[in-house]
Length: 462
Image 1 (cartoon, rainbow, N blue to C red):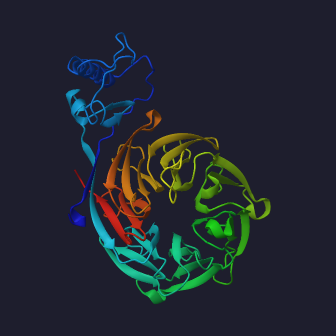
Image 2: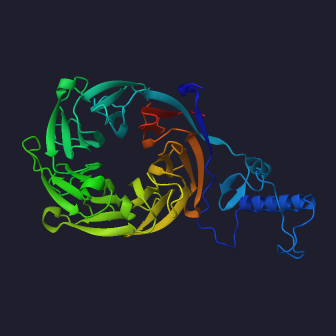
Image 3: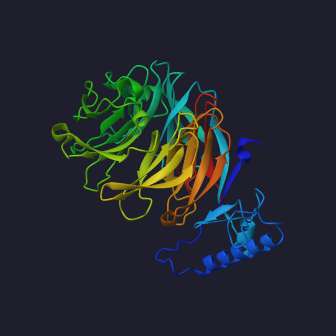
């Protein structure tokens, strides 16, 4: 199968049933439960002798073979039944996610770090990519139809370019790039002077060379002065989160850094978002080896009053990467997180995707699915039904993959997991955006050593 022939098909979301009480079932649920009971009775009639001592009026237990219609299938509002059984109930399971896969670039040394933006301001979505081992930073120009041409921003600069973010740092109307250099402990930015296809149009500027293990970066106007500041994490070497103030002259000298919190183990995710809806920009963060999912409340004057630390989850092990998104559509930002990457598969209370319901800055966990070595999860409304579905990637030589997760009813914990790419060794990141201008979200992903390539999945009309 060629990359262009691959498909991922996921079923259509079931209708929402908000407001139903426990004593009132919609007609569809009643049909499904009636069908389930009928199938159980029919199966029991032909399943042979019951197993003694297992409960029930005759001490019997119905045993069904693995893979039978009642032991495998799709989850629908707490019931498990196959597509065939649901069709019998009068509602066929239809595919709503159809993607075509394209290989964008291969032969990376170490593909780690993606960002999306319209860098050439032509109205379509481009993306950027870092190659740590080959010491290069590139952007991929979109022709408007999801076909990409690679351009160099910087090459042959030692220090491991990795995760990065895009924004107008100097407020000249052009989108710039802020990127970490993991081995050299640096945060640098590349100024876009308006001709991004020309490598000479990008100029390099230092933000900090004092952040050992620089790992992730995010942008936001943290001090409310109208320009973009930078926050970064520092992995297992720096063990801290730090923010860097843009004083309005970002090209002049290194920026002033201020520690948000230090003495943390394996700081990874840092993501700007207004989590308490007070009008200033807070930070979502993970300290992976400490099993800490955190958010830092912006005081509004962080240079003076600092940040207030809040623990979202200190129990689920190894939080890695996620995002802030309004999953329950109540007007505030919830938290979506992947757990488990870079750890043995037998680590308990990990290897999963979960979301956290925001209730005035306090968060309640809701499990979504198991995913061994889950690394990153992001959201988009893939089926156009008004709620957010998910795409997630998993790391590992044997466990690497990408999956789509359909949101059938977030309140009822009804999520359907479907493979997008079943085997993709060491998948390292995924992002969503509309690359072909058809109004449907598409997906781009990277995989590091083991695959070392960039692929995209364009959503197709049914």
